[in-house]
Length: 302
Image (cartoon, rainbow, N blue to C red; front, top):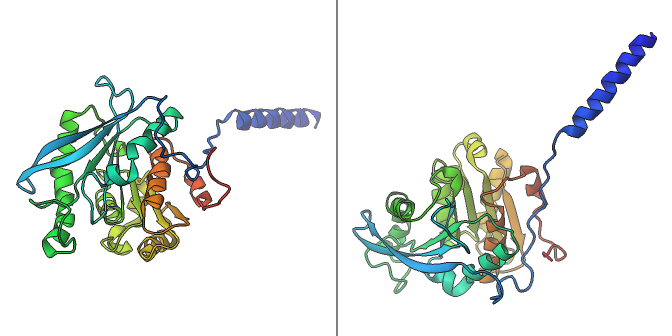
């Protein structure tokens, strides 16, 4: 009996040692953007914004996009890529003119909060005259927003991967956008999980497909998605499109972040979406943290 007790004691001590030696992983949540997150700072390193032109076989013309390369960009390294899409009334310069993404990202890099990445801001209107003029709801322009999926996959992504030092696997590609671009991001990202592992919709618009079409096989989406982010302003008249997607994903058990904050359909919400989403992509993700993404006035970063 005494020998048996000694054996049990040794087994207990060994078990405790094993448990304590197992590495644990916990992830602090990314918090709401603080005041000054989008203010230019002189005394930090800055990335670079350029215009690129690429041949689009899909449209039959040369098209333009903006590219942001991070501070210290080097051809000797390989970078993941975020494709950042605009709204129905904008073009490749909408984020730049209204959201100052380069300032938001520069400030985050200065705080060591981002995985270095390249950001591409394309024109999501895949028609020959893709200027943001006239009736944005005209049939040809609306059709162009859907055609952009082919332009993105068959023309723009191959161009970016041929001209920049980027990683080319699905886990190194993210897509996100505001309003109409949020709908495109959900449609194209969830519809091409072999191309994108990180998907974000900020205040996604009525062009967003129904949840059953977005995620016809929840098991595949659950297995392949690294992160699905859905955010919107609480007073946004289009919030129903985000909510119906969230409700479906919750019912089907597909992990995602559903972040509702005070606000309407404007850049205040969209800039915060970029601020939070960009900090989560291209790094380990703790799915168990997703339910903690609930707006709180006390949750601003310091």
